[in-house]
Every structure is written in structure tokens, then in C-alpha cells.
Length: 193
Image (tube, rainbow, N blue to C red; front, side):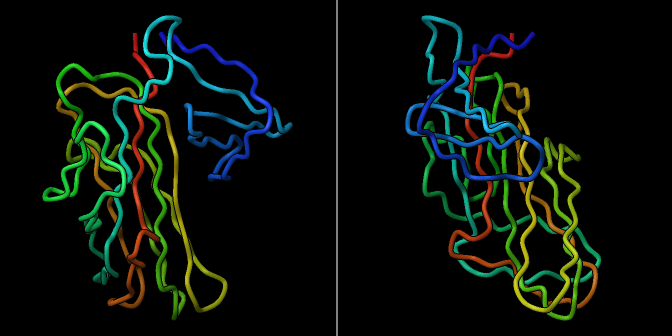
């Protein structure tokens, strides 16, 4: 059962993500915007940590990462600009849910890469070492930089881990763009009960 309350908020400006609904984090919580343009705020149960923000992470590639051809590779998310609650382990390049903080999490990612020679890049979020969500592919129309990403709300338990996986089809050596242009974001939004 998802025990989330939704209320409309005026003046919030969302950042579009793939799909029919945009999800974005504001200064005071998580918001969504539907195709009709209605902006709503997600909240926890009344009286129980309404912001749900005791745990949040934004991890990114600190430098470009070259990809081999036809092999899944974990993104080298070795830096975190936000690591509230300390759940993103930059040594393991994984988000790991701490004890006592299981619940619903908003998870999103973006991969920006060198698409010269029309290489394809596939990506997904791996949960506990197996497929979690994503499976998105970007095939560019022309040479240059391309981007692919995904977003989902997931129920996670203590000890669950998430990492970002990449797969290149085409010319090996294409690079995912570093300096925070490739990232994974995880934000606890409430209880899963």
C-alpha cells in the first residue's frame, strides 16, 4: 500500500524526465507534473517526516569514462555532491539502503556520452546485482554527444543496493561524459507500508 498524500503547489518549476509524468525534487520535497501541467507535491503521512528527506544522494562521474564494446560496465560514480544519510558508497559506486530506512525511493539517472560514429548506448539501474529498471537505449541521428536516462519510484529494503550499468554497441572507446554530466539520484520519499 502506498501511503502518500498529494497536494497541489503553485509556482514550482519541474525539470523534464523521460515518460509521461515529470518528477523533480524541490527545496521542500518531491513534486510531479502531469501532461495537463498540474503540479503536485508528494508528502509522507501526516505527522511522520512529511518531507521524507532524511536520505538523499546525487552521485556522478568525476571524469569521463571510456566504454568497451558489447559488455555491461558499472558506471564509475566515484563522487557525490549530495550524500545526506551517507548511503552512497563512492568506493563501491553504489547506493546502499541503511538499516531502519527502508521505504519508497525516487530513483533517476542520466547518461551523457560521446555518440560519434552513431554508437548505441543502453543503460539500466541494477538492484542487488540484477536488473532493477531502465533498459533504455539511445541511438543518435548524428555524431556528437547524446543522452539517455530513466526515472522510477521503487520500494527498497535495508541492505538493498543500486548501481548504474552501461552497455555500448558500436565503436569501443566512446566515453560517458564526466564532471557531473552522468549521474544517479536517489531520494527517500516515505514509508512503503
